[in-house]
Length: 447
Image (cartoon, rainbow, N blue to C red; front, side):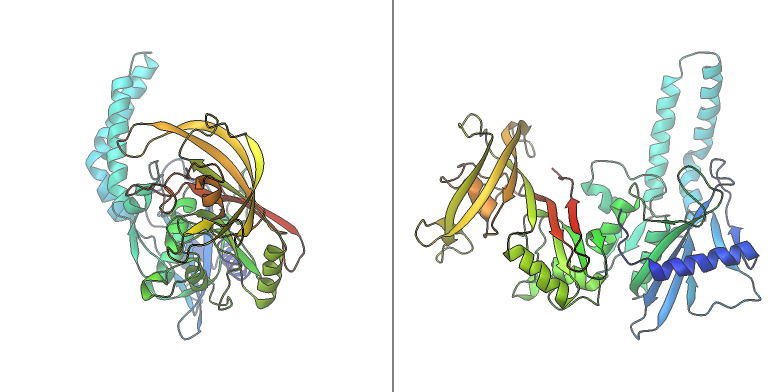
């Protein structure tokens, strides 16, 4: 995953740690027995530079895993540094594993004997897998994480929405340890970095900088940070907005949680209003926000001039091929606000604003929600050339467009409780306001 914070300052702190280790002024103390597979392997060293509420600089330091810890020579001092321990201690993890550990090892030995004799061991393997899953769930039950908004989220609640099991070792990487400590002590992250320390391998080189891992941190960090960071630099940030979150704050107190407020919480140096465009609350996908006034002005100009390229993926509630709609085309529609039924938009060929949209049919597929019977739906790619309110929802649902609403559309179609709008901003391309480099981003469709 892309590093959520600048790395340079924290990288220098990591290099200092490596220098102390190499010179013998710091050691990697073994605090619990390592697994045979990990013995002698390298380790990730992590640093998070933070500021206190009083503006004081503090550096958090840690290593990956639960078996080793950084230990500074007693003859040296390291002021304004904190050595962060694992979120869950090795003792607690071993206690959770102990109930089934003996039987799992016994089964492993029995399976090895049967393998050598070329006999069937599938029943034993199935029993071992079951016990391993039970033990892993007990370990995962121990993990909860402090988040940037002051809340705490358990590992189980985080993975409830993912259709996969939480991987082993999740929560033991450097990044979640560092951020958990920072958020639990009201510290503001400034710079974060992770460096590999150990013998070079095909995947990692000693002393090199690496981003947080996709297989563990890619699931965990967006939940702790409130947003998935796709890219960031000193001028802008690209994020992936989840469905159900506002893009900008509303007028009432209950509508202040939004992409803008979360970005400003992550990056306090951002300008007061960093948003240069927005997505409907029910739409998920890519958004770019500016950190500086200069970047905001230039990105806004690009949006107004039509220089920003966008593509959306949608699932329409019906079979567009049977309805006789061509697989590829372009439509020009005219809509305005229905002042008697806000925020709905209505067709108006006289006073409406022109909305230009290209579409490309992808496929017909089956869809069902809950216990309902599966039905035909149409997956479509939309490329809007204008930025009108509800443009794609109207292109789909209105009779002047396809006449087939997007699945889960609360305004122009039907949305059952717990269902979401199946519309995702999957592609975004613009020119960087400072470097003038053309930048393109893709976000995998979540449905």
